Length: 317
Image 1: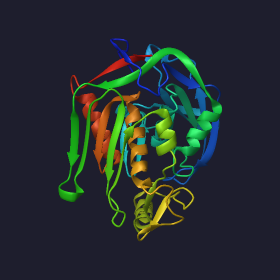
Image 2: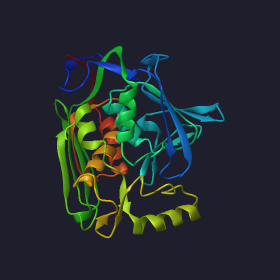
Image 3: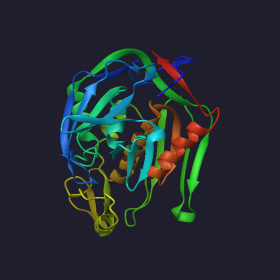
Image 4: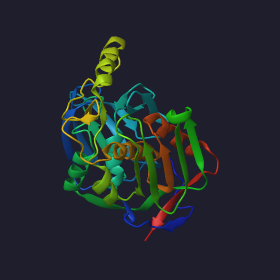
């Protein structure tokens, strides 16, 4: 990703490190994909430099098969492809990586700005359906500070997107702020009422309040989706299990909720992961009503596509 960093500096928001970082040592985790159902081994390697051939390194996915490299896919908004119930990246040669949002949110929240993610299948493992296993594993590996000052994407003017009408209307807006703030409202499940989460996103806030929230869904809708997916050749929810989702039957969650408002917290998790495709945390206030992966991307695309709506800045303590 090419950025014009250093044009101006800003005061470092509270809770963030003053420099960019990478992993202190390699990380390894295994699991199965939520949508493909396939077993996948992931190895995250430290980045040797913040730049490669003059371009910002960022997070790069490396697909492997039988120990042989198939190719790479950068975590970049231009490579995002719409898929049901997840965020996917696909390179120009067709090589793809599916369900990247939980890992991207975790890397951003742990301030791992540069890394190489190796995987031997198409989909990042869902683990327990939340970001908590990633947070725990990244913290166990540790972080190495790099020489570059912390980079942020500062919002300069308000940008919004909307879809639908009435109670089904979805709305999202991002506007200038001195920190990374989110206000998320969700009411997409009948019987559970309105849920809201408001707060300033910091690495600690994400770990303490957001990371443990799980993917969720109604079992009565999941089974038909799986069947249709098989008939049409779409990988969708083939790996869904009670161990990796908050499964809803009627008006209750099998095994209970981790938090009374777990559903909206998971919407925040997905939103942070999808916006992480920008390449850095935001300095802006994101307001979202009934967000989805598609709407998250539309907001990011609108922000990056609006002249004068943002700038790259380096933060200094």
